[in-house]
Image (cartoon, rainbow, N blue to C red; front, side, top):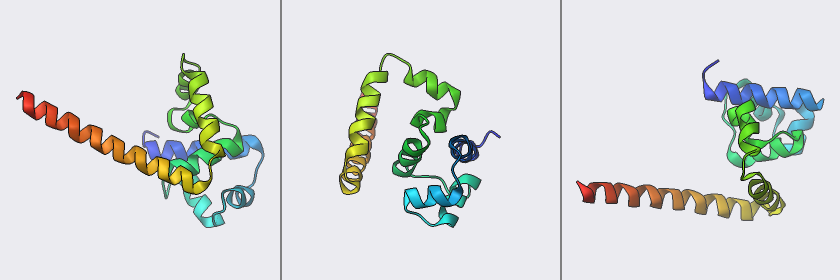
Length: 125
């Protein structure tokens, strides 16, 4: 299983089962249809960051674990653990609308940084 989407899907299912939750319960907690949740577990659809963050919170598994597996746990245990934990706690307390604004701004900033880097690289040539 080398497909990252399939790995994330398998970890979502593993985390739910580890916590002893049903698919119906997870769907209700996430406020999505059961079929939508099933599509996440089977890899038919890839979860958005917000949804994966909520799954992480419900199952009490580190967010990075869903993406990196056991390596993700080691990443969280790095020197930035406290800062990452604090940011995730603050982020999870925000209303959904505020989370969306922050995520959109992060995407905009990432795009700006990529464009700026590209411009600098072309300027140096």
